[in-house]
Length: 295
Image (tube, rainbow, N blue to C red; front, side, top):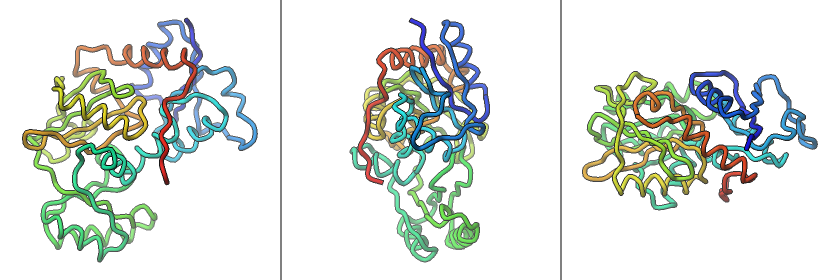
């Protein structure tokens, strides 16, 4: 069965090329939608969405992702990932709250709104601890805080940056991991593949140059991936785990997940598996399952 899919994007990266190639090889019709060139009417659907069986959000910018998926929902156009999942995953505070509420192990986290209360929170964890922006990816603007003087300097810099998000101080305990973390690509909680990302640096993102290799998930990790996916509303997700002693902790769930590094690291044909799932979603004609989230 041929389906007609829309791909929301602002830049076509290798990830999107892999998806587009797989979709076209299977004979599907694909509408590339550059969100930078579109406008969205609150009362009438943009014509570009007409007759689409499914829309796939691949927007780079968080703001574009959140608003465009919200408009898709308003227009009655099925979209993955849906706007509610995007809203939870795009904000680290909402992400952490969702995981904690669902009983999914996640690092101890505190949020503060002034330099003074943030410093108190940091010192309650002790050193080192981690300071992260509430919105962001690829390990950008994350800081491992090793001392009070470093904490004071980082907080002062964030407070003067101007954007309101920098005045939300998101502070986490530092998890002693074995030089790596684990990225799992999952669809509605079912893993497609997983890889370990290793580095001598405390940040082990592939975007930061970490080495990658296939990782076999055990029963505990499988359960956590399913729980983390359910916690944020399901969909096509990147679930990031860290090994903490004899167990795991889930530190983040990503909603516009990149998978090119994973595809290179594992034997699984990742884009083919993703398209299998997209075909099923398109044929079902329904959005990914909704999650009631209080903003």
